Structures are given as structure tokens and as C-alpha cells.
Image (cartoon, rainbow, N blue to C red; front, side, top):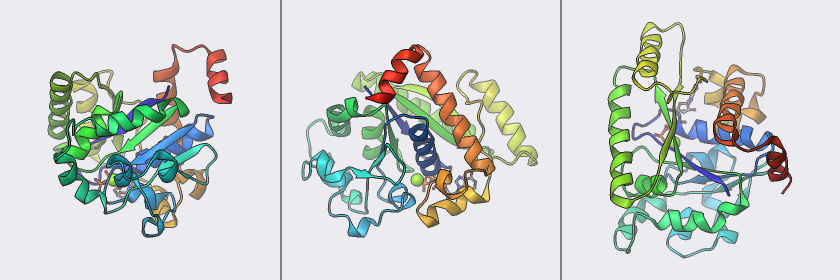
Length: 268
Ligand SMILES: Nc1ncnc2c1ncn2[C@@H]1O[C@H](COP(=O)(O)OP(=O)(O)OP(=O)(O)O)[C@@H](O)[C@H]1O
Ligand SMILES: [Mg+2]
């Protein structure tokens, strides 16, 4: 059964998609079967894996509205054992259409449940808002990773998101755990960045990843080539950071599983 992890922050441009793609790539290279669900109408994760959403017939929009089944929407990435369910601007309309459906918050949860035994990890890339798509993504998830840019208002945003997650837990009875906040776009020469990192570690002890993602030009360039950092620049600082993140996630989630079981998991 896959761990379902959403990558979430209502703030835009904090590195959600970059994290989803590159964490996914390294989990796959470390032997895990990984599915990325692009659940943002901007389709950045889709483009970042080299797919042209205009040439794709059916995507996550069709899946959640029962207009397509999984076989029609799962695409193989170039990296072995990494799959993607693409998005497109079609998804803008879904927000309105979902509103008319019963159980509108749990549509993605129901879909994900149908395939979670095919993967070790399902990563959901969420849009920069707290609307119905994000709520669907959170409800479908067991865990949340919150990428944070080390700036002055970061803590406020983090508190808002934690409140939203607690509301969902209370109102929908779904257990969602924050796996960790991930500092992204980090520049260690910047005093404010260092200060924010210190504050976040102090305010949320045990909930901040050891791994910090540096600001790195290769990470910024790679999506324009439709490549993950693993394919574009595997020896860059950004690549090393995402490899470390993947190892940290594996340690956090799989440490209760004996290495024997893990090997079996990887073989299946
Ligand atoms: N560590 C990094 N170093 C340099 N550039 C980065 C890094 N992480 C992300 N970027 C760049 O910053 C921009 C925003 O990143 P990304 O798209 O991952 O954020 P996002 O949170 O998914 O944005 P949105 O909220 O719009 O979905 C992109 O141009 C991306 O290439
Ligand atoms: Mg994004």
C-alpha cells in the first residue's frame, strides 16, 4: 500500500512542484514505485516531466469526473518506475463541477484508493490555494510535506495551513499527518534565510526536515527541458539535496519495516 503524500502550501512559487518532481525521481531511483498526480491546473509537474498537455487526450480532470479510468490517464516518465497522471488547464473547471457532486471533498481520495496498492509512493502536487482541489488532495493523503521559502511571512502561512489541516481532520474524520516542513530556495549567505530557518526549527521541533533545499540554478532550469534534476544535472547541489530528502522520507516512513520486507516491496 502506497504512502500518499501531498505537497502543499497555499503560497505560490515556494517549490511545491520542484519538490514533487525531484523527490519522486529520487524515490524511484532508490527502488520505489512512484506515481505523481499533477493536481494543479497550471500543469507545471506535467510539463516538468516533458509531457505536452495539449497533446494528451485525457488527464486528471477526466479521472475525477469519471470521464476516464486509470488506464487512460497514467503515463510513464523516462525514469524507471516513475509514473504520472497529468493535468491541464481543464482542471480550472473542475473546481466548479466538483461543487455539484455529493462527497465533493473525497473524490480524489476514492480514486487514489483504487490504485494505492500498485505503488510505494503517490505524490500529489497541489495548487497555490486552499480551495476544493487542495482539500481533495489533503483528504486523499496520509502525509503532507510543506515546502517553505525562508522569508518573513513563512511562519504565518504555515500556521494557516496547519489550521486548515486540523479543520479537515476534525470535519471529515481523516487522519492527515504533517511529515515535515521543507525549507526551499535557501541561501545560506542570506541572514534572513538563516534566521527564519532557526525560528521554524524552534517553533515546530521535529517537524522540519533536516534536509534543506538550496537555491540552485540547475533546479530552476531543469523543468524548461522537461527533465528532473536527476536527468538534467545529477551532480548539482540541488540534485544532492533532493536525494537526501528522498532518503530522509524513506527513513521516516519505512523505518518500521524490516529491510527484508522492503526488498520484497521493491521487487514486486
Ligand atoms: N531550489 C530552487 N532553486 C532555484 N530555483 C527554484 C528552486 N525551487 C524552485 N525553483 C524555481 O522557482 C519557481 C517556483 O518553483 P515551483 O514551481 O516548484 O513552485 P510552486 O510552489 O510549485 O509554484 P506554484 O505555487 O505556482 O505551483 C520555478 O521557476 C522553479 O523552477
Ligand atoms: Mg506548482
